[in-house]
Image 1 (cartoon, rainbow, N blue to C red):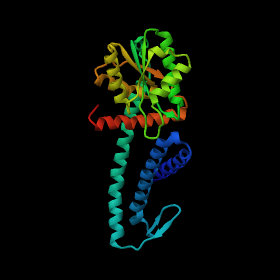
Image 2: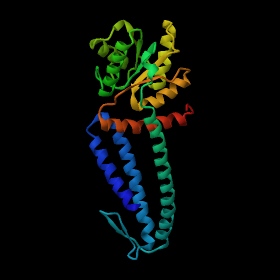
Image 3: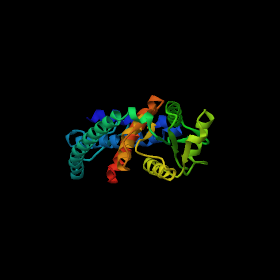
Image 4: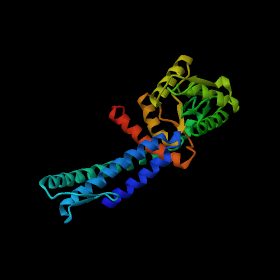
Length: 275
């Protein structure tokens, strides 16, 4: 296990460095940095644990070797490290199991419901902008929304997304402009520009439907495939049918990071008592 943690620490550190130049990979930088720190700490604990069985009383950390005097404190540290290693291994295994279970649910929800394409109203959830242009992830969602408008001429589209602290315009306005410039019927597209997260996306879109007299009995949400398991649950919590339309994520590497981020988003909802 010591070698496993050492290798994993190095791999995560390298991946974190790779993420540094790319702003869109900020989550990957945070995740791989945290994982590198945790696995590195486990590796060090293994080395400290083995000091008492090391005849030379040296702590070998690969690039650094520390000579230790054979006193009682060293053996106490070694005993404490033994228990910390056991606890750390249990926590790590439990975390891996939770990741596998949640990711299984995320993948199981990555599909379009047949009824959703014929929905009376479609909530297109925001997915990030750069300046006045949508990100690749958001463009994919908007492209699917245009297809839905073509397949279902009666559907009303609500584009959802407020303005972030580092953004010069609302996400909804960028989404609206992109869809109209690519052939979307402006009279069928409504902007919801106050929300800052998925829960607010859906709740605010419901309010727009109520104000306009649009039925939400057959409403659907449109988002990236990795996002739909959580989206369906939020829709159920809001009293809606869990109907969803999947859009491709685009870059495979980004899809992996998005799935990892989605795990933490679901955990956050669980800890908040929303699940």
